[in-house]
Length: 474
Image (cartoon, rainbow, N blue to C red; front, side, top):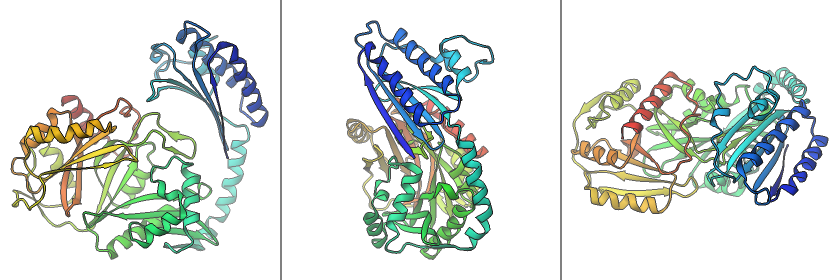
């Protein structure tokens, strides 16, 4: 269930419409302590009008009421005067006292209240309260699933894609992400089928009786003998029952049959679950990509970030031959630690440069990111020409992937990138032409989250600390 009502208010006299809408929603939803949510809602509107607008006849509020199976969320987007709300919205504040009004009062009233800035420069206040019936409903559902868990696993069919599976896969993606998932072809059954026929993706499904309740995919690289593991979804009613781990094991076996050098996964930093799954299957965390996940992404209608979020990149190295590399002095120790963790022997020298363009670029319009790929020493004028093209495209993030095998003057390349505010991201094994690359990254938007990224492992936490320090340095 996912219902949404949105209202735009352009005059104070229309505020009464908000009250009417709240009453309508309350009649159709069993809201936990509805009177508290109503008071909190009133406090936000009052404070926004007081601090944001000098004229009550010239206001701009967009209010969204979103109702799911377990909670109601109210988002108030306002375009009024700038105001420093941060002193009222700090997690460390003591909210134990009894406040009569204002933002402090809101913390006393409801379960979750937070503030964020939207890319269109609006300010958003979000109120969230669960529904009375949710705990009872969850308890009933979990009891039923616990009873049937052994029966389910004994009748679970894990297999490769077959024609006719597309619709079930698309519905799984919808149930997990609504229409916010950025790999949009997975909403269209015929495109899922075509992608599998062309081997552009290899889908693994979990089928229980006549229903597809899980999906995992290998997406082979077009430039190297590796594949991304992606689109890992399980029917929300059947989560925490071992289905994902079972599919993961099959994915690994399929990758070995394909004689891939490695597989890699991007563990979303909106939550720790995908990171934990990657680690549990022996993957090595080697990079963090900031701004990879668009702000529209929402998981089960309740997990999202108002800014672009990040991913922890982890590799499962199927083939671990020794590497002949030339490591840059600036990041030598950090890169060396990655190869030590991966148990790969390094020979620190460089092989002759193959015949490739020294610099090229690629882009992803869906994610609004661009990448510059560097294969040899380049001069500043050439690099700046490529960077200017990227900047004109207004990508939110720009990445630079630097070959670690062949660039004799790699220190000058890193110095040039640092000069243009590129900072560390990590190591990507066999990423192009079966060779290893160092990725640096540059933020090209103010709306890339740095503060609320979830790192599950101690390794990821240390890597994030290194990246933020390097960002400050450059």
